[in-house]
Image (cartoon, rainbow, N blue to C red):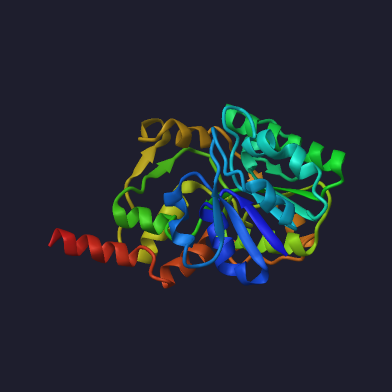
Length: 301
């Protein structure tokens, strides 16, 4: 299979690192030449793609692709891939799998209740509304062109270099408490294996929740990470007093528990990291956070 990826970001890079040898060719897009530098020695060809311009070679790469993974978010309320390439994708004679990475944010606030793929979306922020609109556009394209479209609604992503261990080590972690608040999370390597399983079992116009097995309060994650590192957790901070960006604060507007049954029953998958404890322990064992703490100590000395 030839794979083309719109958006060679964190999740796409982990997917390539784990399963790149399964493909005859991998190519994809980056917003700038600098973004593609880590890939120069590892194989995938990169092509520029931004809100205002794109590499004219991209259509030829789409013509050669058997699988298409879309990791770029809407911009200005529109899906940039569909805006530029919807007709080209619809006319493809080779594409047998298209995956679109979305977010569980499209469900909105369930006041702590359980959500599955049959739950009606009710996004509460403009960002999530734009995601839902993009999902529906991709599904409509699949219906019109008889393409196999999969929507993956992702919980909060963590993994190497992006986790609570690192935040504690660099001093940016906050133990924010909002009574009753829970989140699901998902390790980036579990996302990667779900994507591969879906490519092996294409299912036309299907939605998957990609989340772990245990929704929980965000402060519990920070506390557990501190325990692994053998240091006291940062003090609790009431949500109302927390120093958060507007985007980070908006995540706390949604309170829900995500069911992930479909990825297990339909794709035959078993999560490697079913809870944040499994994921953080594996990251700790790999040196996450501990190396940063040592480097910080050396700088202070």
